[in-house]
Every structure is written in C-alpha cells, then in structure tokens.
Image 1 (cartoon, rainbow, N blue to C red):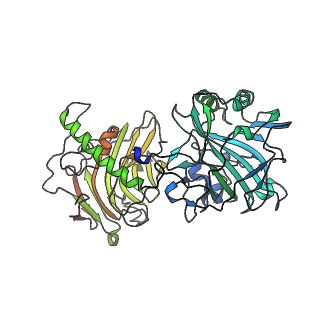
Image 2: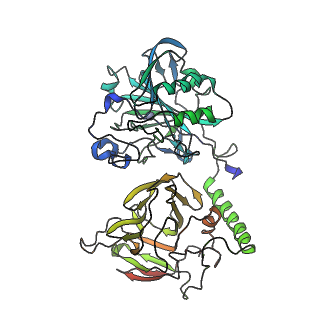
Length: 535
Ligand SMILES: [Zn+2]
C-alpha cells in the first residue's frame, strides 16, 4: 500500500474534571452498569448529535486556508504551585489562568487543566480517543480551556455551546526518552491511587507539545466523558508527540482507578459525525504528495493479494487444524443469493446446523448489499432462553456484536453502494473482537472474555423472530446476502481477504455454518436472487 500510505493522526478531548460529576453510580468505560454504551441513560447529552471523540477521515476533511494559527500565551516555562492529581479516570494537571489561547479562536480561552487518555490493556493496545482514518494512536493529551471573554469560570462555561476549547495531541511511541516528560512520568508513582494529588512547582507545557502546531483539524464536539456537554470547539493536532516505549508503558501501568484496578483504556470510542464537517488548516496528504483514490487502489491491491494467496493455498493445501470443509458443489444453487425485500421485513432464514454452536472463538463472514441506513441484523443465534447469545448486525457506521447477552459496537467508516464483505472474529481467551471490511481490519474491541457460546440454540439469518411478542420490524435485515459462513476458530488475514475472491471454489467455507451446504428454510418471503456479487 505504498502508493497511498496512510498518515495517522487524531485528536481527542475529554474533560474529566471532578467538579462536574457527582453521581450515585460511577460511570466507567467498559465495566459495570454505567459503561460507555449506557452513559446516555444517566447523562442524556451523551446521546447527542455532536459528540466526541470522532474518527477523522482525512478524505472528507474540508481544507480551510483561512483558519488562523493559534497563539498560545503563557504556555512557556513558569514557576508556581500546580496540582497534579489522579481523579480515578486520568492524570490531571491544573493549569494557571495565565495560560491562554489569545488568537485563532472566536474568543479568548483560558486554560483550566490538562489530562491524558491511554490504552495498555494488552501490550499493543492503543488508547487515544480520536482516530485518524480509523488508526488509533498510543495516547492523547487534552488541554482544556474555557471561554473567558463570555464566562466567569470553567463550570459556568462547561455546558454552553461556545463555552470550551480543547487542544488535543496524539502520542506516538519511539526509541528515545522525551526528557520534557521525565518529571511528569516519574511523578505518576506519587499519585498512584485515585484521589491522590501532589504539588508541582514548575511547568513548561509548550515543551510538552510538538514543535509543529501548524497542522490541525477543527470541529465542534463534546466532553468525551459524562456529562458529555456539547460545548467544545476541538482543535486536534496532526503532528504527534513522541514518547519512548518505556514512558508509554509507565503511563499505562502506574495509576489505579477508584476500584484499585490499573487505570487503562480510559478512552471513549468514536461517535457519529452526523452533519458536522471537520476542517483542516492544511491539505492532508493521502499519498505521495497528491490526493488519490486510496480506497480504490487498496481494493485493487487486495484483489491481487487475494489471487496470490489463493495460488499459494492451492499449492500447499492440506492439514492445518480441525476439519475445514472445502466448498462442496452446492446443490446447483451456486451462486446462492438471498434477497430480503423491504415489503417483507419480517422475513428470515432458519438454519439446520451441522456442527454444534459451542464456541470459544469464531469467525463469521458475509457479503451483504443493503441500501437503507437502518440497522440490519444478519445473524441471530439464541440459546438457553437467551435471545442475544450471538447476534451480528450491520449499520452504516458500525457492526453491532452481541455475545452471551453482552454488546459492543465495532465502528467503521466505509461507505458502499455495492456488495461489501464483513468478517467478525472473536476469541474467548482474550475477549478480543475484530471487524474486517473488504479485508481491512478496524479497531479491536473486548467482549465477554472467558465466555463460551452455548450449543443447542436456534440459528437464523436475518432478525430473530420473537414468537411471544410478535414480529418487530426494527433491525430487520433488508437487502441481499451471500457467502455467509461461520467457523469455530479465528481465520487468518489471508483467509479473510480471500473471502473477497470471485473465483469459484477458491474460498474457504465455514465449518459451523457453511454457505450452500447448511440447510436453510426460508420464511416470510425471502427470495432466491440471481444477482451474485461477482457478476
Ligand atoms: Zn480528555
């Protein structure tokens, strides 16, 4: 992919000031009753249309050459008495009011505090909040300011549409220690436990930022933590700050949260952009100096790669692990396409599985063609009275995944009016879930580690039909599907990419649910269709 190497950068902000959340139930990122999927139940703004962070798609960014560079006053070295604390969600340094953004924004904004978001769940897990073209940096710094022209203080400004401005910077890992961070990193040990704080007598924020501040993205968004007020004008800088791997590791492993667990992965996942436009102060380079149709080239390369791996596989086919059926001649129906029409939104296909669904890991792949923006449930597997034992749904921005009644979404930013290939894999051992779209992997998520999907249930293509409550058309699948397969293991990248091949008999079919082989009973007007994805 050299033609169009992706340049990563992203930004994110969230305000984790303890003054603005007092609540009976502690909100969390991933655990407990008030994890990020449920913030909006207690903090309605979290379900708004202008939420942060976002995935910044450089191809869709609007270059605005009139955007002014920021003038940062008072950011240089200064002595004083500054509090550095562990608020249970992050490390925060309170900043002096002499630090201001004096030019480049509609008003003057005065600094309040800065804090970081990081990952660290596993060795390679990144933890920035904003992503750039789906790429997540190691960590992210937020320097929070309030509009001091219009408001008395941070608290008054925090829920006003023009109240706050946050500068966001990404962290990258490198080989050399960043000595401007040495004191900061070594102080983390002194505020290891939630609500601990210390005083620092010297601060030099400018030196903790990248040299180049000319390249940035700008958009209107929100606090990335409850109460999620939509009050932030975000400036996300393209140039990352580099820390050494050891410094990153120290950041990821030192602080504890309010439950005395290591504070990790304190980031919110990307929120829908909706009607917002992200502006940039510069022309983001998508390739070597020019804009190019990156997606087009990537998909062609994938096709070529697919052909090469197909050849390779044919040359050394033979025992890996477990029984992996090759494609049988499927009943003269090849290529089999199912058409779920809008007028029959209650339609579904019931499968007679040849292999029990007792799964510690799986991969499910499918080719889907949908034309509406709804949520489309592709696979519903219910067992033991549990409706959401394994459910995979697709919408325009994310794939929803239920395992054992627990849910995550796997966000993506791919638009297609054409057939698209989706593969979802999950492993109980690590709880890692991955989404691949047309052979490209997205951000990894964690779900239901240690769980085993129970056998003996009902496997349906389309939306599960609830006999007692009647048929609800919401989340029903409308569109066409083909080449749906489920395996009881995690496929290799090559096998996943090979799913896109159009060569008959060349792709691997599932050993749990096998397209063209597993028996299907069609209900509610599902049609067989002749428009195969390759024709
Ligand atoms: Zn933040």
